[in-house]
Amino acid sequence: MVENTWFRCSIAAAAVAFLAAVPLMVSAYTVSLLVSMLAYISLATAWAFFSGRTRYISLATAAFVGIGTYTVALLSDHLPLPMVLVIAPVVGFVVALGVGLATLRLSGVYFVIFTFGLAELIKQVVIWFEINQTKTLARYIFVNASGALIYELLLATAVVVLAGVWWLSRTPLGYALRVIGEDEMVARHAGIDTTRVKVLIFAATSAVMSLVGAILSLRYTYVDPNIGFNSLVSFQVLIMALLGGIGRLWGPAMGAIPLVLLFELLSGTFPHYFSIAVGLCFVVIVYYLPGGVMGLMDRWRARLRA
Amino acid sequence: MSDAPLLAVRGLRKSFGGLQAVRGFDLDVAAGAIVGLIGPNGSGKTTVLNLITGEIAADGGSVRLADQEMAGLPAFRICRSQIARTFQLVRILPGMTTRENVLIGRLFGADPAPLERARRDVDVLLDRVGLADRADQTGAQLTYIDQKRVELARALATRPRLLLLDEWLAGLNPTELQIGIALIRQVRDEGVTIIMIEHVMEAIRALCDHVVVMSAGALIAAGAPDAVLADPEVARVYLGDDDA
Image 1 (spheres, chains in turn red, yellow):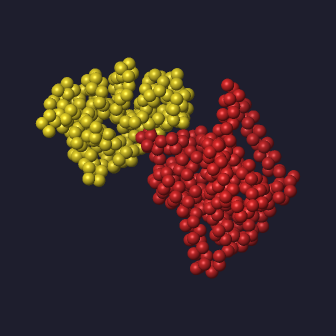
Image 2 (cartoon, each protein chain N blue to C red):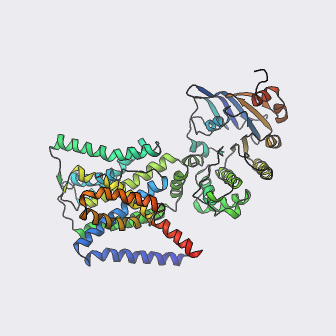
Image 3 (tube, chains in turn cyan, orange):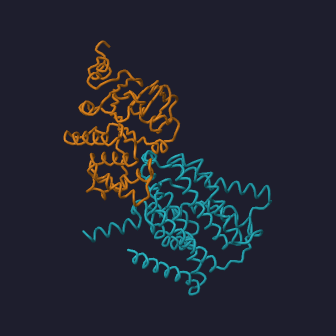
């Protein structure tokens, strides 16, 4: 058992080392594609850890990614980059804590609607602030970050997020999240402080989203509120998690990899019909792959055994 | 009943809009007793249970467990204060295994245990309620009585002093009913005080030391089961008024 664990850990370490070396071996375009994949792996994994388990469907991903992006846009001229990358998730965490305390007592559809509105709300506040206070609508980001650096930062984030989810799923807190998703009333009457669990994990996963948003913003030289708070991101992350399967560690990652490729292709080929394509993907996945790719693999495995 | 009661409910009130669901309800439950709470549908029994366990907030009144005030506490705190419950409509976690369904109580209840110990304790508990061989089945795969057993085991896993059963015996066939009655008796003999809402009079007679009858949100009779069930007023609220 212990040997097995060591074996697995060594394999994982070797895989991470290999992935870390990839930017040395491939073209800049491939690195940029891999950057998107790593970003969405972290976003979808974090999203699924909260929304997949508790079944409180959040459409606030874009809000927290945008908070990360704007933290960099506002602070990167004044503070060293490492410090900005620490501040961004803290801001995301604090905002999510407030939002969570205000809304996670709501259930189901009210929560979905509120989270969807949140990205728009923050965007409008930023627009108002920029126009009235700074008299400008866009900002330049002057940070000297290579594609390889962005890649390594996002790789580290993805590794930490996956390891964190793997570990938390095995703790009582992970169990508590699943019970909340199955039946919140049972959770309350079994002694689970449901509000605390929900708010804490919502805030923690939102902090991850803000960190990813902050790292991704290093790619941009220019950002405005429509780029920073692009609500399509919330839906893309949701679709990726659904495609992969939300209840499993690797599920969201399995959804993120093919869909980043697909969305890349679509946005290049049919830029004007992109949101229609995203919508179609969503419908197809919900109809034909209710348990995601991981669920499909389970069914195939069961059929092979039978 | 010379000692102070384990549970003392005083003047409990709750209205839903214009409907007074519970109006000035009093109840004393001695430690180690099984108290039956009966009454026609809509008389407020489940509301009383929801008020005691913090599922809904009372408009007024007090609920004291061993001199500790429960009214106003959230449900999870009341559970951790050693009041556990089952639900009128079985609430099983369909996607989780029997073991996981019960484990939650041991991990988060009145005496939270670390994961490994909780798993061991839960296996002992599953054996006690007759679910040892179904520990790895999911909740959705279980039969009705086994789902009821899971709910009971989950409630017991929280280590309650007081257990509230909401029609736990309803819907069981005659054989299952006898098994259920024996199980409840065993739980009491292990030191858990019980309040049971029940329509199965056979179970009330077999198990209860004391019965209270509710009608229209108020207590209308209380006493030993035989005396209460023979009370003409109780028969009238159950069966309707001949003179009406």
